[in-house]
Image (tube, rainbow, N blue to C red):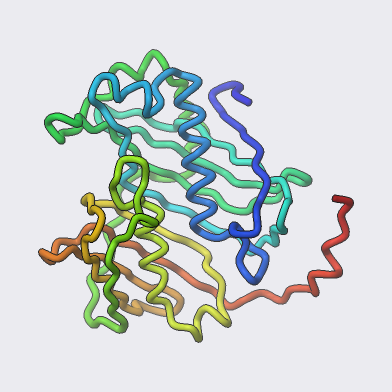
Length: 263
């Protein structure tokens, strides 16, 4: 559904979308948000399969997301709502909310930055041609779009290597942006995962990687609840950086007390 510059689409969660604590996984939230972005661009005839005819490609370069400790069950409906809040000469800023369909309870919210890449020159294209196609809703801007500068790590608390497989690739044969996030979060200590919940993510995607590339993921504990992750390629170039924040798990009721639905 598209009205007044805002697009809304309803999804139904599957088993693979849910964590053991009955929350949407970061991968699922990113996947459904990006799917909604693609659907909205399709309405305006500037989806990936439209602009590829002009040798262009959509590239997501940044996401900031705040996550609420909201229970989400298998087969439950939720809604992704998004809108373009700013259009500069080279960037498109798209804000979003993910809410439960039954009561509009907020699951996650954030903002994202997109560019259009020329496939021949590998340079960014101007967004001038989008000005008369997309409705910009600046009044609904989720927050500042000023680029967040990550802190400098003083130590490396965890390091692991990952060789990119076919499971990591997207339809462009690049390592998917969601795969970087999944790989980065593998460096989280078990003690944190068992007692804390993810409350925010900031991700910068910097360079492409491909099948069989070896990625080295580093993690540094910055302060109470904050962790810096960065992935480098075999040449030592940072290809993705991520800042995650975790808070203690809130008290939750037994699932049987909440799960009472007619399927």
